[in-house]
Length: 218
Image 1 (cartoon, rainbow, N blue to C red):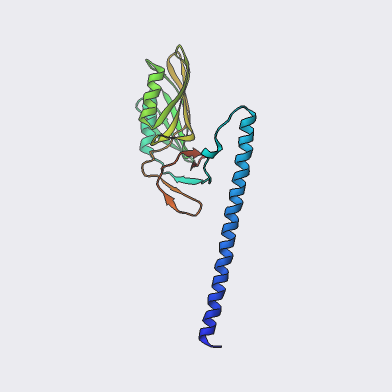
Image 2: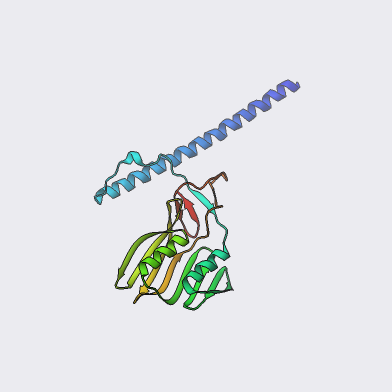
């Protein structure tokens, strides 16, 4: 068999393989698009049955899930604990849990960002204290359910004006004393990278959603 003819056969085979792979890719994209259309239609119908109406043309044509690569920042965690407890002393309890004790109580932060604190810290103005704490650590004030120094205040982590859903902190007060903190504490996101399912990296410019311990962009 001549070399030129063999080359032609190889080229034809490669072209067929590429065509097959392209067909698989297009089929997958079509399936994802149809699935998204069905999901949107079901959600729209559900909302409309409950009296919520909106312009479907405002919805994006494609849904992209992106993961964030976060690095734990022990210095920032200690600063957060100190802001709650006064001067905080840290200890590693193993299992990715950092514990802090201070003048007003104790605080623990897990590797996934889950934060809990039990303390008794008197404050002059619970809402002002909460807003300042949120501002310092990149949270946006959301709601206040305070009455005469009792109740709770909630903030949500944000980045460049975009809220990070499922990454909220709730501060609980009793008689104008901070008695508890619960929610999610995230490190600074200045150097964070987001990656799609194909491994391609993008700058962080979209709203972020916290999944099961893993932040996601929508």
